[in-house]
Amino acid sequence: MYTTSSLFFHTLAQVGITHAFVNWGSDHPALLEDLQRQRADHGNTTVEIVTCPNEMAALSAAQAFTQVTNTPAAVIVHVDVGTQALAGAVHNASRGKVPILVFAGASPSTMEGELKGSRNEWIHWMQDVPDQPAIVRQYMRFTAQINAPENIPHLVRRALQIATSEPKGPVYLWARREVLEKEIDESLFNSSASLYKWPSIEPSALSPSAVNVIGDALAQANNPLIITSYIGRNPAAVGALEMLSRLMAIPVFVTCPSATNVSLSHPFFVGVSFLAPGTHTPLLSTADVILVIDAEVPWIPINKDNRGNPERPSDDARIFVIDSGDPLKETIGMEHVAGVAELVSRANAEVALFQLLNSGSTGSATGYYTRSRSTQAIHDAFIADMRNAEAVMSEPNVPYLPSRIFGALRTAVENKVPHPASTLYLNETISNYPLSWSHLHPDTPLGMLSSGGSSLGWALGAGVGAVLGGVNAGKGAGKVGYELVVSVVGDGTFLFGAPSSAFWMARRYETPFLTIVLNNGGWKSPKLSMLGIHPEGHGSKVTGNQLTVGFGPDMPDYVGIAVAATGGWAWGKRVAAGDSLWETMTEAVRIVVEERRCAIVECVLESI
Image 1 (tube, rainbow, N blue to C red):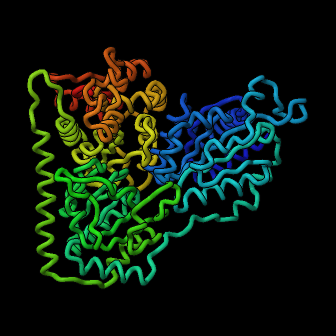
Image 2 (cartoon, rainbow, N blue to C red):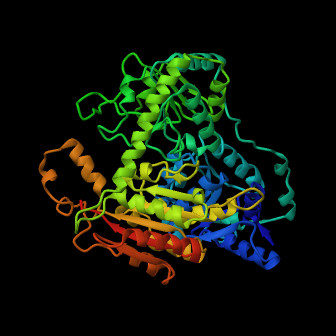
Image 3 (cartoon, rainbow, N blue to C red):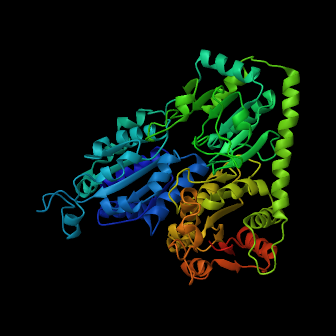
């Protein structure tokens, strides 16, 4: 017997979805029954099912899987409550522009047994809400109800066409229980829908006039600057960016990154900032031409440096904005960059950069040479400052500094991973973002990722999804999966990430990853936000615990949580002041790489 659910799974497999991250409920009897039919008939299922005890962990895992493989994953959740339990992961997938198909069942609409699947449990009344997709609609690129089996092949393909077209993002389909239970004829498996291609929109290009204007401006500029945040989501665009930067000796500065946008060794890479006052490059205020390409927030208008000078472009600067999907930031209430730009273009970054490379625009060779030497000096100083910070020894009984922890981690990876370039860092360090994005910055595209959003709790579930995706990406000739995945989190982020669920998933599906917990005793970011507005207020004089942003005095056992959730499979250690940092990092990397088990290292920092 085949049902609508049979056709749903069949269609997912047809369109190339290989994994579904699921959290089952009372709306899913037909789905569960069909999966078992598949096992009985074929020995396996058309789509690999990943059981997830927590919905946010499920969507976070699916997001990382998609980020790593560039192939959409599916998430299946339970009616309105499961949709709500996706929580902030919905925000992350939307802001991170990650194409994921989310499916939810819904309470039956019949109650007298009129149709198979009619209401037979009390919760079917409680979970029947007026507008279930409204819970997530503003974060989704597309929402639709499946009303009948006949249109599933079309509807799934249309949803994915939208999800994988710029601006990419998640989509949401839902169906009532009776629809999922409806019996169908096998002929629907070979419907004409499979003849429809439903292609994604092709990458767009700059107009000829835009190529000329931007190309000439960059070529003739005395002090050009490129700012980006997420161009690295397309590795090919990274190569094009570095080529243009080298050709015209243009410094590249990264703000609020969510991907590896430029190689650490690139001679004109001049730094990273998450836009705290005083952390932007001084090149911003002196630049006469600024190319903002695939950037979230390139500067904050009210910020000033340590001398009180504005950290914003000069009034005379020529500013050009290129964005692959949303140059006007239409999903953000207020945005400032497009308002001061001379030209704004919706164009694929890779396509646009190669257009500029081939534009024929040329400038002064002498000017390029002079600028290349001064820019490389900035780059070299940036690297030297990092390495010097990693070597700073703490005083006795004083916790290790984050920079030293990152240096120890990076060194352990370089020494213990056969191919260090095959390491992926999942970065959710929040108040330590500026340091971690600098000190752990890889030299290869897709070597470091974050959620692309601001809802915390992504990195642990993402560890599971990234390992699954890395294995999947490693299949086939010429492909290499990740040898090591490292989730670097704060203590607050760790707790947000439903750790017991995430580590249980890791054990169940044998997806070992290394977790580094930076324990500063609570939520440092809210305290920093308060100090940004009230630098000398009442809150500036008290501890984090008094301010109610601290987790003390009785701290959670972060290592114990991971070990318990895996039934003792995970290895872990806590590193406090004076403990063996280097040896612990080396052993943790070895456990993951050689023994293929999860490892967790809690690093105690100075308390907030």
